Image (tube, rainbow, N blue to C red):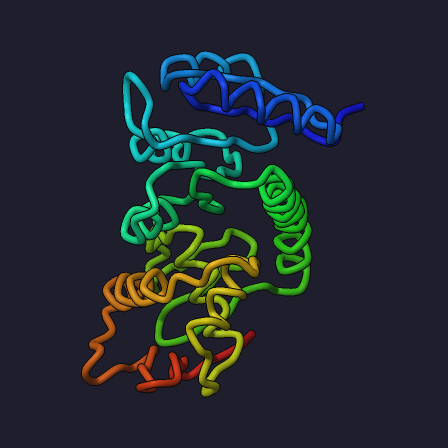
Length: 240
């Protein structure tokens, strides 16, 4: 029985062959698609455990695909792209990608990252179940952080529509009130990866969290910037 099923989406036939042969030798079952249309067709009949997604496809772009995947099946995605621009990486992470690899790369690193993402995917339902059983809600300033639903709600029960990255970041901060967390530490807590730490990605997510919380960065109520050190949650927690 295969370890997991992986869907590789890339129009480079040679790379598809190399990736498939290597990962099959590692015990994975492989599916493939060379366009956005083929990807959607494969997903109609299959539910892979993880998707390897190239950003440049003949009929669409990876960013659009990420948006569609986020609204459908909750399948982990590793972006595999020839684009090394940091902004591109940040956008993909913000859109819900679980990791980002720049071509060319070693197959051993790809395998390691796949294992890490699959491990997180397996642990997430367990964590959600444990938090629900243990009263996994944290209240502060009229907001409720629901660990069971991985979401933030206001006093009227309206969802703040946090992305996965935003939720993990807020949970990390709220779980360590009045304690400064560095950007590197926040990245580790939210991405659970020891690879490249994109400081700017954390800054952008903090900015978006502040907007959704209605928090003024000049006179913050919830998230304070500690210059040269990181960020700190300063809100009053009612219960946890």
